[in-house]
Length: 82
Image (tube, rainbow, N blue to C red; front, side, top):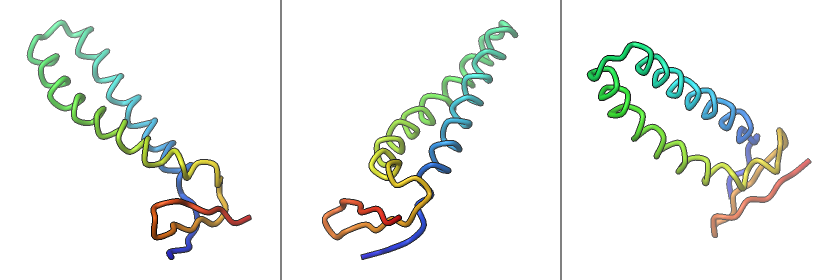
């Protein structure tokens, strides 16, 4: 078992900010009207969005622990400590 501080909330905030930056890049590409900018944003944004969704599903069980201690059991479940 591995007991440590829960950083799930911090990771969710960083993930959200990263996704907002990708959205901002898409808006900038739309405003520029350049087809190359759109292609560049899509090439970078789609894998990042897929990775973001995957990480969000991994973070979801940890978010209930807030900033307390968290332990991951051998079966993959999490246990929170005050």
